[in-house]
Image 1 (tube, rainbow, N blue to C red):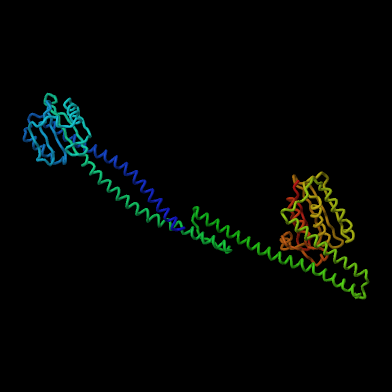
Image 2 (cartoon, helix red, strand yellow):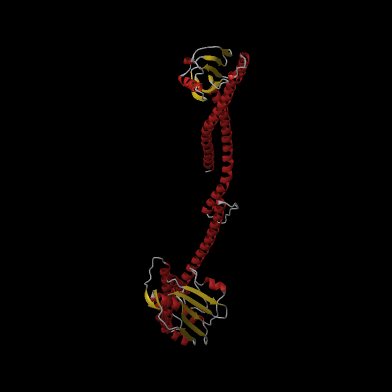
Length: 481
């Protein structure tokens, strides 16, 4: 991964520099060449005008003219100069490198190219002209500038032509291009080095995160990253730390849940083994005609019925809890009147409360409370809490049931005057695989509240518990209407 990203970064940097250098080179060549041509053209034009002034001055001797021609011949290296008279004769000609300046009448303009002859005609008409054309003399493109020569009567008496090879101009541009290419080469080296070091800087935290993810995948959820940068990589590192923390918490919860499940299964197994052992003992005694003298046959039968009833209740609660925890198990929802459920629960609890000398009171508002739900499961939910209150409320104490509408919610509370619960026990009441057993609850399966919690969850009902030791408990149901 590291070498791949490094190569890509270097390739991107070099590619950008090469593209930039290519575009810049093309622009530079065009601009530099045009600028150089303009500069040479301006210089040639200036020299041509100076010569024109000298030629037009009748007081200037031929010796002075030759001296000036020689000076220009030295300055304008690789340049050609003509002085053409009005009758088309070349009065003076200079070709650098060919024995200096020639004076007097030479060939006529027929020896010049057509484009140069056109320039001569325009210049003899009083115009300054220039042209860029191919020259057989230089065997390359040349820049030719023409300037008219005026006499003292302001008449054009001749034309001065100066030609310079574009090769000279191109050689000047080539120097700049070589400098540009050298700069590009240096830039590529810098880009390679910058790409390498930048990739190392960027890749290092990514490699660290990759190692962290590998360790997370191996179950080491305590791994943490120390990247504190305020950028996207820093955000990714912090998110990985959050992920590790959540996975660590989930792993801890999963381990606790597994331990609770094992304890739950062991507890249930023990609860089932005990009555089975008792039943087997009684059955073997009946078979052999041997049972304690203080027990009659009716006593033995009654005890066997109690043991089987307890087993039946425990197995029934286990099956019910298993069904409720199955997401594929569907409850039978219909429109139910919650008053009817409350009245059923109260009617079923009155006789038991009377036997235990417990005062059962209710404070239920009038009205119509229609909800969507499973009637039997909702009654089972309230019965589980009511059964819990009846078991733990001492004689001569009271249980109060209240229900009222609060906006779009129904608030139902079952309050007892039992021993209450510690906060630690309250936290464990509705947890999965949590079975509440109490010495005072010898007949219960300990699964009632777990069943009630699952039924409430299926109906989007919230159950809250308010309790403190020695002050009783209140179970509050918040039911959406």
